[in-house]
Image (tube, rainbow, N blue to C red; front, side, top):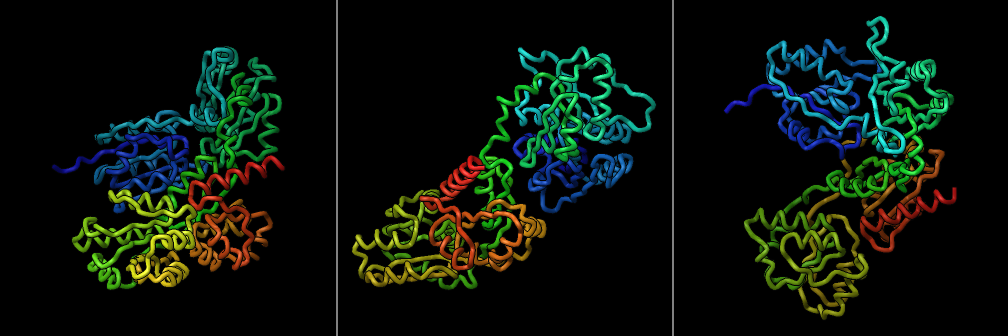
Length: 511
């Protein structure tokens, strides 16, 4: 059955990628055209089919890539050809002009669907620790535009009623007109001692909050340099922020951390850091690709019954080995009778996902600990298969040979420099806008050093701290001139994250 052309007017939420709705993601996955605004998080474009047309229409406080009339024309034109998602920040029907766009579609005879989003009017105050209602402070709340139509004479806002009859006032798109908003509230009877919060980039890692009263807030906002996009909250509920400010109290809030893992593996680590409030920049210094030739690995797989041990030293090694095993028409039954060793818990977990039990995981997650452990197994004369990266430390095969093992080291994958490097990230490092750089392997350090030297970091003019997953990676960093600040006791991403949190928590306590 042919797909019927349609427009989904989708609310993308207030900025935090975790606040998009399930229905919004469903719509994005079937989109043939996506038309999105300035306030719609670009991270959501990952849900869009690769062949979809992506159109940015801007709409940033008075500076528009396209006018509203041009956007309306574009919606109608594209909807006659394809399935369109109109992605808008917040909720399309709360000062999002979604109603106007829906009217245009209706008049053009085009089918549409409204997908509500989490409005910034509610979410942003919540992330600033401000409940809009509270039994002790507020029984009513109003949402007000801070940016009325320029072509209308007079105002539709009943200032005298708002000032006296509503406990909590939330102004959207109003930071530019803050002096006028304050003047109107004071002129119509609101006390100059009324608490006010202005929250910029709410729900994101760039969130900033200015607190004051109607008498002081304009000066405070100017002093802090807060600009659009921002939400203004007026009312006694603002006082609760002192107790309830949960988001900005996260230990890594306000810290920018550079993640150098391969892009396809960075998301897990990024999520861990973001849970603690960090703003993460992904700067993959390695790209994991297949081996230059499958010949060695294929030969080893065809002769698996000749090996007594199979050792994996990375998750990538596990992934490429098993993918190739299955591509050759084989399965895990070919590993019967072979003992399995993994260098650490993540590698072991990846193997376990195939329904296989591990025979040995060293207590310390490094090659030397594998040698020590297998040395107790009497491996003299035993055949060992080690599928790993093309470039890796030689200590493991060398020491196992010294113990009398017959070891076949085969190339299962390669790590290379990515073809494209994000210029914005490079500029952030050069400008000293990064607080911490993380390295999870020696190859990430070596490749990073091809773009930045230790002198480059010093020239940035700010303290940039280095976190390494373990001593081997740290040694590589030091050899290249980098000062290493953070090494976890356990060589895992969880432990690295926790060590970064502890380091910056201590640093904050000293400041």
